[in-house]
Amino acid sequence: MKKLLYILLALFLFGFGPAMANDKQDAINFFNFYVKSANTYDTVIGSFYSPSAKIIRQVVKPDGTTVDVDTDTATYLKQLKLGQATAKLRKYTNSYKNITAEKVPTGIKVSSLRQPKGESYWLKAYMILTKQPNGKWLITEEMMQTKEQIFLRYAK
Image (cartoon, rainbow, N blue to C red; front, side, top):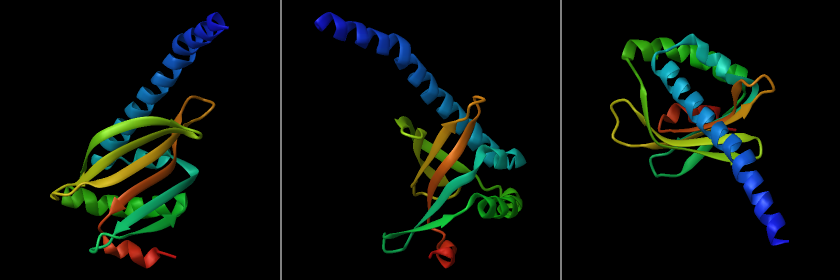
């Protein structure tokens, strides 16, 4: 029985373990490419999202409470396209730290802290990346905190 457990452990570590580790690293590489694309206002960023992605903007109110504002991918991509022009003029970018990747049932969850340019605070963010049959990664869920209270008008 012990021998069987050792064999199964070895198979996991040398078989499935590296594959999971590679997926985590691939997801982090995708995330880093996403950050670079977003910070350079690349229009390709829309292709990073699944057509049915769940997009959450978590508004942090002045009192510290939060309100989730959900939107569909099509609406989000329209807003993104409009916002990119303004962001480019303002040279708006985000910095990220504490980037981690973990396996979740639907893919790899990449979590981080995000700092908008010119701010001293850090906000929580995550995206769930799902590897497609063709090997391409897509964002299937994204949550980013924001202190922009204007998003509250879209809260349900």
